[in-house]
Image (tube, rainbow, N blue to C red; front, side, top):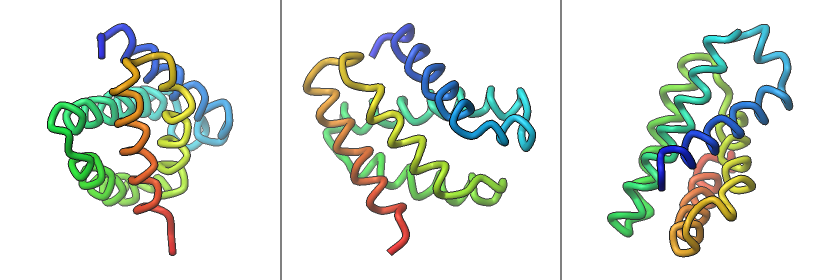
Length: 117
């Protein structure tokens, strides 16, 4: 994935999250928004790594680790799942077809692992 595409996806996702949850501005401010953009870059980096290795588990392990880190910083699991859902909506048309299919599968699997039983 090209850097300009990654920047577009990360920015669009962060804006979408903060538009849907305006209280995040009060809770985390501009710094939180910047972290959300950076987090989405990390999500995309891990999706790319999983794709290059053809190993979905790489992303699932990352998602489990991410939940531990973010929940310790008062970010609810539901927001992580919501973020992954938004990436699922934004990815189509922004990556190669094979990459899109693989990454969408990774995101769906990670959501399934993170959702409470």
